[in-house]
Image 1 (cartoon, rainbow, N blue to C red):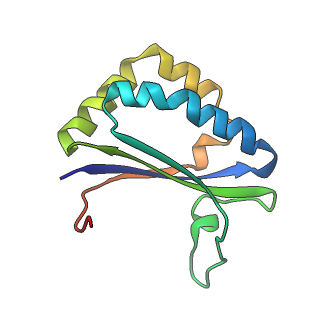
Image 2: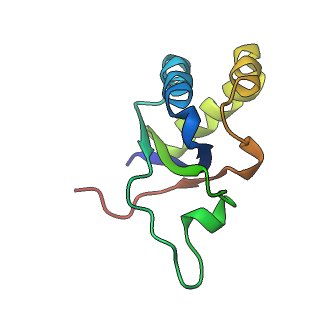
Image 3: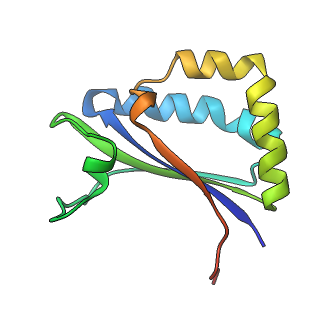
Length: 117
């Protein structure tokens, strides 16, 4: 079964085009590392929660939009191999240096699907 790496970030609304370009430029590299699919989704209906919510999780400021994204890999092992490649590839430093958002507030994790229809 596939393995999913998920990400949530707060991106300044003014940086939407820069973020889209950043993601589009990075996609071929992630595919080279083994991702089979990459999805970037710009927050459109992200409500405030009573206890917690996406905005709070990434400490989004009033002028920021929550972005939800994920990459799919053929397996957890493929994801682990990709993560190793990401850590050692100098091109990743360039991608990291050009992020149009505060990467310190991004949350991420690896997920094993329990339902895929």
